Image 1 (cartoon, helix red, strand yellow):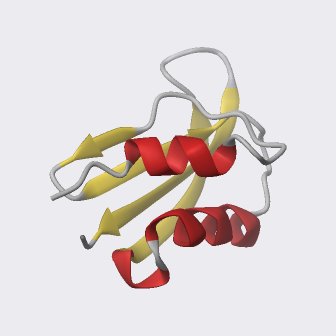
Image 2 (cartoon, rainbow, N blue to C red):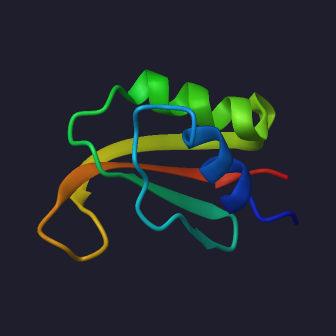
Image 3 (cartoon, rainbow, N blue to C red):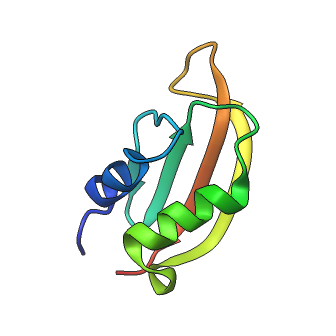
Length: 82
């Protein structure tokens, strides 16, 4: 299974969103976006463009602390289907 972290980081480089540490645990991917209240549809579109729509399943978007810090941001979690 290819690691999606680099593709996700590259895709977000050209957006207004700043990422925290992208984490992969087996096929579960967690993408922390520093901006609180980021548009879930826009975040999903960037991820689907980076990995392909068929590679992204069970997407959830939440607001939570980023990287154990005081920063509150938006977190996109999904299952990666390589």
